[in-house]
Length: 155
Image (cartoon, rainbow, N blue to C red):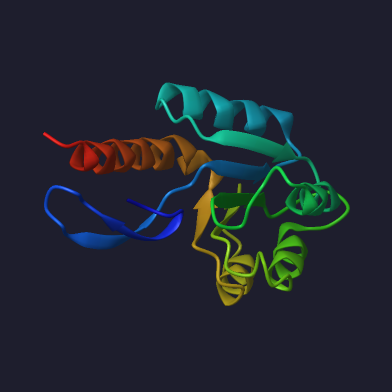
């Protein structure tokens, strides 16, 4: 038994642990090549989450206001350099909304500018990811998800 963010209990062992089960990913990325690379990585590692793409901060806020996404099962991946509204400003606006304040968010970037890292961490991001590490990240996420699902299957 599980909710999207919370405690998961293994029916066989009765043990429980905190888990994050993400149904949806909101990828906020203006570079279409990076969107294609993300989707390729998703297929490569057999991850079946629904992926919504916003190409700007305002478009992301519109998607968050839609009935398509819920705060309890969505993960945000935000490019730090976006048109119209940068990723940090977007994250500040997301954090100011009570329903979305605790949504897990990762910042994506092609540079490792220290000021951005510090600012992102101050906004409570779950991580700050370099885009060139995306394949590695997806590989780790895929193997952890498979292991978790195998532990949940009654034998």
